Every structure is written in C-alpha cells, then in structure tokens.
Length: 322
Image 1 (tube, rainbow, N blue to C red):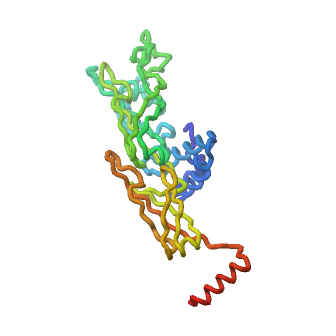
Image 2 (cartoon, rainbow, N blue to C red):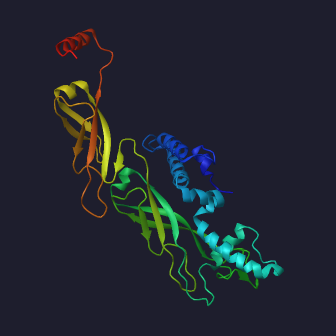
Image 3 (cartoon, rainbow, N blue to C red):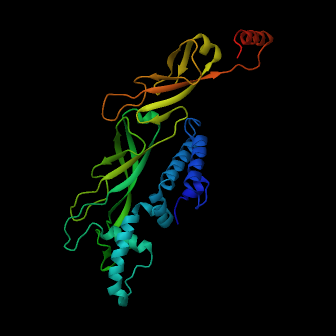
C-alpha cells in the first residue's frame, strides 16, 4: 500500500479523467496557496502534498507506475528489470524454492545486487530522482535550498553482502542496504521553469566495490501564482483601473515580483488594453536578460451612484448617444 493516497489527497477517484484531476488540483491549490495563507505551516505542507500528488497523477506514465507500485513507483523500471531477471532464475531454481514471493523480495534483490556484476567489478551507483517546489518569486532569484533525501547505503552489519555468518542479515534482511537520511545543499539558478531538471553530481546511491556514486536529479515544480501567469520568461497579469482614470488619464499600480510599479494610463484608454513593461518579467536562465510584464487593464464601473453622479452620467449619455 502506498504511504500517500494521491487520489484521496486530490479528492478524486482512481478513474478520474485528466480534466477532473486538473480541476481538483486548481481548486485545492487556490485554497491552500501560501500567498492565501501566509504563515500557516499546515496549509503550506498541505499545498506541497497537493503538488506532489498532481505531479504524479497528471503524468500518464507516472500515474500508471503509481497505480501498480504505489509509493515505490519511481523504481518501476528497476522492478521490471529485477522481475525479468527473477523469471530467468526462477525457471532453473524452482526445485530449491528460490522464487520471489512478492515485490518486497524483488526490491531487496534490486538494491542488493544492482551495483554488481558477475566478476564483482566496480559499478556506478543508482541515480536518485526527486522534485523541489518553488514559488514564482523564488524562481526569479538565485538561491540555495537544503533538501532531505533517503539514500540506500551499504549495511554496516553485513558490509553489503546480505549475510552474517552465512545467514541472512537481520538488519538489511538480505538486501545488503539500509536507508539513511541525508541533507544536501542545492544551488538553484534564477529563471528556472516548471519542469526544469537540476543535476547534482554524485549525490545518488552508493556505488559497489569502489564505483562512483550515482547522481541526483531534481525536477522543479513552480507553484501557481495568484497574480501572474507565466509564459516563457514573460509574465501576464490584470489590473483594475477606475473608469475616470481610463477616460481622463492618470496612474495605476501594477504588481511585480519586486513590488508595485507605477503605470501611466493615457486618456481614453480602452477596456482590456494590454501594456507591456519591458524587463519586468522573469530572468532568462543563464543570462542577464529579463522577459516582459504584460498588464491588461479592466475598468472598474462605479456602483451605488449618488443622485448627482447619475445626473452627470445621464448628461454624458445625452451628449454621446449610441
């Protein structure tokens, strides 16, 4: 059983369509977004769990692996290889009862022997794949994050052999590996996009017989933002402007990733007009360039008119008949 039921987290059933999963995610993301719940650690953790579930269920390949292997879905390809190898061995060993009984046995065999070869030569360690979640503001500037990962290390009791005094090791249960929590500092370049991959060399699983450690690959997940929509390095937003300012001209406040900006509104600006603010978007990865910020203006129509205001609008209407 999976430690986390991603379907339950998003509130959908296992037969949910891609559209239903996306709708459920958007609804929950808006509810638990850190910007909506500032300082609420419980909501922040819930938001991260929601993104984790959506990352898997929104990807057809990952979802199929999750449906079969649960919280071990990331090792699906290795399971398949180990299962294939087991079928070959099982054909010649049935008389001695050496078949695997379940995926747990395959998992032990996988991590006990994946880094070996028949001659015991040094073998490269397993790569680790994980994800890291960033806000749009965090993605706009370079920073260092400390992440925690579970890694497979050689069992100290049996030295990775899986046996103690010719018996199955009781610590690693014959796998030759145990789990250890490690902390890694990861430098994240500014301008990373949703889905960007970050490789940290030799921070994966231990190698065998002196072989190099594997690598760590982090997939970047950018949280939805309440103000901005990102397209490449450009940002898009909408701002509300009083009707009088749209007609007579003036100034309006535009949110940006570095605080509010002042936008000059020309007289007789039409509703839904889009203004482009050069260099106020996201930084371009690996360069000093920036994208643009596009602001669409929406007129705020007055309500609860006073008698005098109504008379003025009626006068205007008579002057400019349709």
